[in-house]
Image (cartoon, rainbow over all chains, first blue to last red; front, side, top):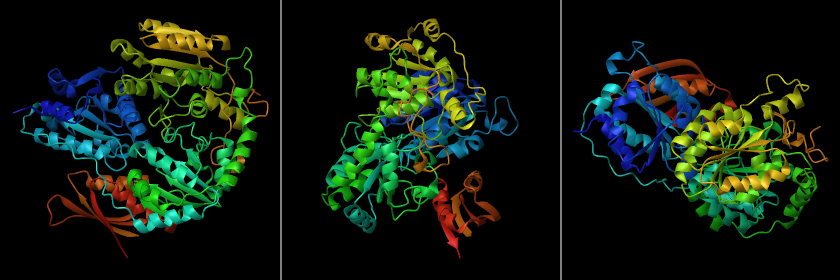
Amino acid sequence: MPTGAEIIWRVLEQRGVDVVFGYPGGAILPTYDAALNSRVRHVLVRHEQGAAHMADGYARASGRVGVALATSGPGATNLITGIATAMMDSSPIVCITGQVTTENLGRDAFQETDVVGLTEPITKHNRLVTRAEEIGPALVHAFEVATSGRPGPVVIDITKDAQLGTADYLVPPPRRRSTDGKIASAAIAHAAELIDRARRPLILAGQGIVQAGASELLRELAEKADLPVTPTLLGLGALPASHPLNLGMMGMHGEAWVNEAIQRADLLIALGMRFDDRVTGKLETYAKQAKKIHIDIDPAELGKNVAIEVGIVADLMDALSVLVPLVGRAGHRSWRDEIGSLRAEAKKRCVLNVAPGDRLRAPHVIDALRRATGSGATIVTDVGQHQMWAAQYFPAERPRQHLTSGGLGTMGFALPAAIGARFARRQDEVWVIAGDGGFQMTAAELAVCAQEQLELKIAIINNGYLGMVRQWQEFFYGRRYAATPITSPDFVKLAEAHGLVGLRVEHPRELDDTIARARSSKRTVLIDFAVEQEDSVYPMVAAGRSLDDMIRRPVTAGRAP
Amino acid sequence: MKLVVNARHDGDGLMRVCSTLRRRGFAIEALRFARTAAPGISRITVELCVDEERSHLVKPALLKVVDVLDVEEEK
């Protein structure tokens, strides 16, 4: 009979897992011992937070479950930030943690911690397993829960004696991902009627479209009824950025014409998004003239933040395949022209229109990366100013091209998540875009790039500040820069110390050649871009303010005041 | 509002239900927890203090708990 530890690897193999990210320790040692007999590849991280982010990045890039492995106590607690990140962004990961022996549970044993209690609020489901015969069913269930409905993280905490015990277990074949397919037909018909009657409609496109694989149906819907589309941060790529109906991102740092269009719209068609506060601004003033249709797979989201006319609980693939044939062909020329004139006015302020001179500015760096890599590269951004600039100046042309920590806003996400994405998309070019602050939070994972001999490209947008916080201090705290100036190690030497390639760009004229040099290498290359220190991200809707109160780009095109 | 929740209980079901309610800001005013005739299934009767305009959010939040089987509101 196999041991519990062997059953873990059998389930992973049967579920098509080709790589797990983890860190060994006492309570998970039986499972690591059994790993030597498994064909699943193990990637040794440098901190368990990295393991959770790598599993998350793998899941976001591939649509498959990412798996992280850690020991009890500090191993499990180090996973927490990564699990919470996956929870907020509905990313399907399974975390397996070792636990002290069953007889030691509740005795404050060495490296004992209440993993189920700690992770309950940040998981879709979690469970403590104390017997070998429970391991197989619990893990199989974990994979089902992680991927069904609205995806999310699952933690399975397994005592050491359960890993060492033996049991019979035949891994059942995976159930096809199924939705019940039942769509409230009256509600869909009502939605189609509202769309047909609307004069100023807008589609709000969220990550639910990407996760349902419904991008093509979104395009059909938009084109058939001539509906302008604006993505959320996580919805970037649901419709190609270059599609004429794609207006660009909404929200706190969304484009001015998009937020203005939302406030003028008479119908919002919200697809697989959740009206997050960074999207709506002050709720009392949000899209007052618009009726709202909300289609989402999670019933708890309907009516949570915004009152809706029509709510439909469904997978977007199911819902849109019924909705698209029902809506009539339409043209909204005058509405598109109105948005177009708002856009033309705003475009005049675009920072890319200003010759940079001798100043290296972050938007120019990000635009150069976009020009060089096009739609082929997967980009993984960290959190802060560079993240918003990347959303504005390097929006995605395809689903799963632009990965970022949206809901939790986790600094330190980018490098480990990109390592995970690298394993999911081995043929693709993968770029990290990170700030100097966030990068230092998980920079230890550079050692993984070296040990695994990965080809990863890393752009550090280095302004010597925790830039987004500095920007808030500039706008709202009288430029009192408390604790935001930050020094960094010499990133070029840091890369070299890891056996990687480090390059630096300090002048705009070096941009294109250095990016080309990095791209031609088969190794991990880090480029330290020394950019303007006090640039700010525009437009901006201050937290809790109305979308009507945008801080616009200065007409001097964003020149630092 | 008063709810009757049937949930699988292997030691964690009650914690999950209470934690979900606390997290979403629904204050528990009274709570009863009991075995049912079905093995492994417990019944949680809970009275909550919830604003009228947010009361529709309680049931979907509880139904997201994997161990919760059904939720009925008692008028």
